[in-house]
Each structure stands twice: as structure tokens, then as C-alpha cells.
Length: 115
Length: 112
Image (cartoon, rainbow over all chains, first blue to last red; front, side, top):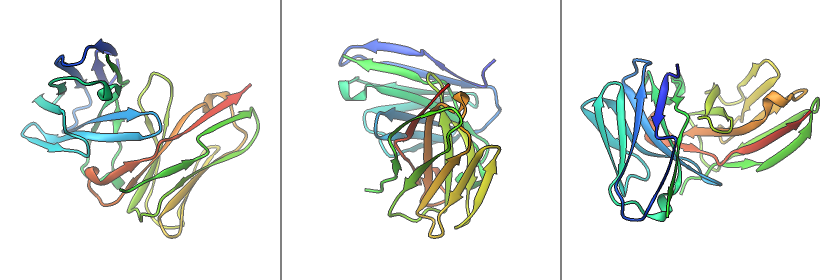
């Protein structure tokens, strides 16, 4: 079984709808992250959480919110989806807070299309 | 705006050939990581380089961090079809994850 799972894997929705993307991990890591990937732009950090009570905004948090329901679960919500939120979304986990000594483990991604 | 550029954007080569892909910025990074991403999957970490001038080898892959810590290269010797994928570099402007920049990637296709 995969260590980091994301649901759904694909989703098509309409402008204005509320969408929730879910992430679960079995690695026992405290730290979890949400990124979006757009062609030609690389991965950009949306939100990250270093433990259940800690939520931090990333580079592009506007239009998104998150919930850390448990150590193993981190959800990303789009309150009112818009077409420029069409992207590939990745959840990741890690064991350390310092990039240079850490390994992030990514889920398989959710492809979201907003019409 | 901090930018991390990767070149070439696309690369298609025959099995057995050597290749080098590049990651460049005007910013100085405290460390830099290389990932490989296959279609339908998330990125997988290949290596982290920390010291300017550092060279790391992973089987047929050689990673180098520039002396000034602004650039990096990935060299693959005798490429195999299994090397096909999107190669991403990510540089850290500090030790914190919210200061990490990902490049757009180099898409490599190795033809049998």
C-alpha cells in the first residue's frame, strides 16, 4: 500500500463549487504539505503543517484553506473554485523541518479541472 | 521574484547516450535537491547537495552543486528507458520549507 494517498485522483468541477482534496499518510510523519504543479511553473507551496495544531501559509494560499484533522490526515479546500485553480495538486510528508536534511514523500497527485 | 530555471525544457535521446541537464538561478541556495517525477506519480527525491562544489553520484547519475551555490547539473551516463521522466530541481533560500523554489523541470525521454 502507498505511504501517501490522495483522493480523488481526478476531479472535474464547475466555477464556484466548493472542492475538498484529501491526503492520508501511514509514514507517521508530523509534517505535511500541499503543493500545486502547473506546466512551466514547477511546484508551488500552498500550505504546510508541522503538527496537528500548526498550520502555515505557503507562497500561494489565497483561495485555499486547509484542515489537519489528525497526524495522518491533511485536507485542502477550494472554497469557490475558479478556472485558474486548474492544476495538479500534490500532498507531501516529511520527518524533519529542515530542507537540507529532509526527504519529502509525495502522494500520486490529484488532477483538478475547473470549468 | 525568485526564479529557478532548468534547461533544456525537453530532451529526447537514444538509449546509451549521455546527457546533462542544468538548473540555474541568480539566487544563492543553502541546499538544492533533485527529483524525478514519472507520469501519474509524485516527485521522488534523488539527492540533496549542500556544499558549493559538491559532487554526488548515484549509480549512473552524477550531481554537481556550483561553487557559488547558484546552479547545479545532473549528468546521466548511458541513459536507459527507465530514466525517462521529469527531472525537477528545488533550491532552498533558507532552511525553512516556505523558502524553497522548484524549477519547472526537464522532461527526458529515452528511446530504446
